[in-house]
Image (cartoon, rainbow, N blue to C red):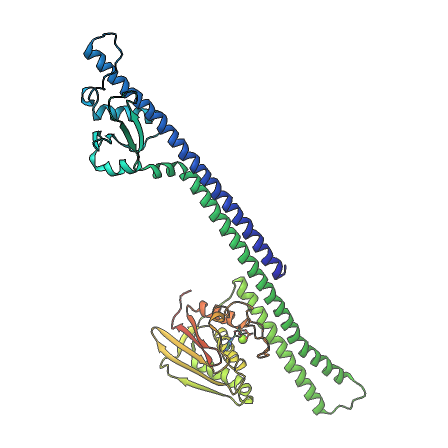
Length: 428
Ligand SMILES: Nc1ncnc2c1ncn2[C@@H]1O[C@H](COP(=O)(O)OP(=O)(O)O)[C@@H](O)[C@H]1O
Ligand SMILES: [Mg+2]
């Protein structure tokens, strides 16, 4: 998959997701407005019923009081205290609302605009609310002698009540959207990780082929020369060519060893031999090996041994490789006159090893990645240094095996400083 295709896919999926989400929002809003109008309708029905009941109560009371006289009742209606009170009205309203599935708190009052007063009210605390948000229903409309009166009813938790009905739907949609977005980002990041990995593997194979080719070519040339019957062979000739073969062979063996080691690291079968070793001795040996390569570039290696107790428990071979890898990097990535400082000191319950160079340095973003297997800082044309990107992952694994810690301070074009802490005694 190439990059453009991946970005195109991301774009398409994002658009599709966006569309889906808008449709979802549209439907939820639709549903909520349907709910709202249903609610209004139910309230209307319920309160119309309530108004009828109030009027019926009044009529009954009038008949009781005035004995049937056969005349049409055109007098003003009775005063409310004669046939109604707060409790009765409350129970009538709540019954009618409950029948229609509305069970949220309500406030009511009978209001007379003429004198701006409430003739009956549930609780005086809600006057303002009633006035502003109420549903209003005229009472005794046929009574032409009395100025208009209204039954006001309000639902302080109306919004919340409507929302609770939609809550389930909202929640499920939200969860589904989160799941989709999460798996989408996860998939994309996996694709990118795989892509990077495959690029790194390619680089590794290219490098490896290149590294193996040179010694193989040299050895085959030497063999040809040795077996050539036309060349007169002195003992000097033999030793030169045999040495050449030996050297190239050991280079090959070294590289094969390096690659094998990482295979072992991967399989988790790294065997540590536990013995008491002197870090200073190890550093001495490694520096002796690497010094020539540094001096060719006019560089120096400075050893500063401050540790009064350089003896720790560990594996001699692996720790030698560790020091070698770090010093090798310090040299490889310092193109001009390497100034490499390697120092030790005792710290806490162990030993701190510091390797500092004045090389090309590592940017903050790369610092996290260089300990990954096969990872090499993409250098472009800045420098041409061969390597497999295995050294630091090996170093990190060895430090881990010894229960130690590794950290890095580095600035681009200034240099790098690797700090390795190794405890005197490690627990597996
Ligand atoms: N001392 C250093 N200075 C600058 N860059 C470094 C240093 N050590 C390591 N690096 C960077 O970290 C990468 C990984 O190092 P390593 O695992 O040893 O692989 P290799 O040396 O084979 O490339 C190197 O390719 C290099 O870019
Ligand atoms: Mg290296």
